[in-house]
Length: 148
Image (tube, rainbow, N blue to C red):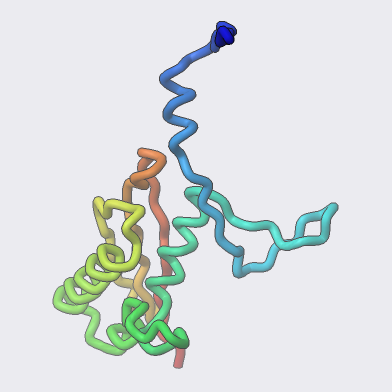
């Protein structure tokens, strides 16, 4: 019995097709619980938005806040009650670096910018990072504030 093979040609950019086929779809639930206007279902966050949401959640969580994941979190809230000086900024930077390195392996942290807004009892933090899977640079801004 002879094996017949049919020649199937692929048109288009093969390099782009290979790169796209390797990318994973990353999804996460949007904690804002935004509803889809037609389906009336929660719209999930996808790809880079899901990663940014994950980073925000990690940095706004203290340790022992998540059940069964007691080590997850950055513990930044306690540093808000320290004097607003270079030492506190350094501690915040160190906590962010170690948290991202430990709990978010999908990104490479490139830069952390911390702006002290002591008169409003808050820090404005901007993280610049590279998403490994998509090979793109992105950033996220988080405002840590102290409530009295």
